Image 1 (cartoon, rainbow, N blue to C red):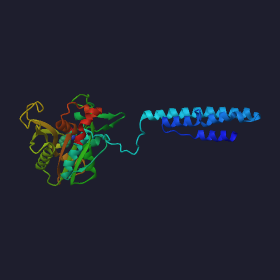
Image 2: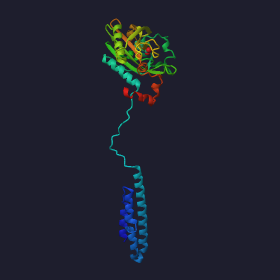
Image 3: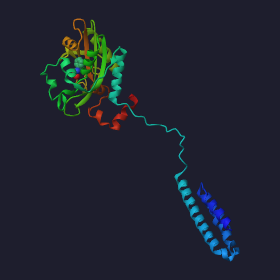
Image 4: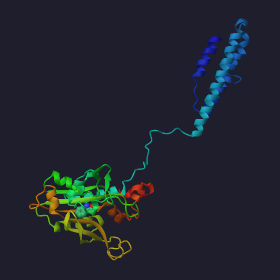
Length: 339
Ligand code: PHE
């Protein structure tokens, strides 16, 4: 009898039920009127008197174990049944929500792509720069207003170390390490100490280009910029160059493109002029070539620089510059298809 009880104990400990119905079947098998444990209890009267105490205790223990086990199986099985079928871990997790490229990255890639088709290679440099590469090598006089606190972020305790305020510093680094022919395009982030508003930010992004070789002329510059404008804004795009001033170029110009929204007829976007400004450019000042170790009697060059935010605004009509750095998913999601 004791043997039988122990065997049943082991059997019950190992019981499993995949559904509430299976658990109920087990209850019937062991605990119902015709169940195995009930049968044992009925046999109890045949146990010799001296064993009655021990066998009685063991049967009661077995019954409690069986009741608890089956109740537990029933509870587990009904929780599982309520949760529905088990998760299929072999299923492909599709569709996967893909991230989007940042609009500035999309436009930067497009600009770099256009110029790389013209033979420009990519150059990058540090955002924390020294005064020489940002200003002095670029022919800024010592008292040039751009060096002023209003424009430049200085590193505390190191007045000669600054956050670059334009990517011309990368051009300086290329010129000092390489002899012509040089044909590079320099994208990167720049910093200016401006109050943050819809139209200005303390950092933005630029792409600058530099071409130095024998016999490079303003005509070459104009042709490359026309091609760029038409690739970027469509084959109908016209350009116009207005005289301007930069310390590092002579002559210097600012370039407008015909407004791509109204086709040059005049609208509120172009303030009814038919033109929108997109970049600065010019012939590299011989003083800049000399300062960077390039013989200005042998070589000439052109340079141009544009703000990526400006080009992006023209392409996508983003009204507020701050949206570019707020990382609002609703804004970024709008560029999914432009990737
Ligand atoms: N470095 C100028 C700027 O930051 C842009 C520029 C580059 C203009 C090259 C002319 C030539 O405004």
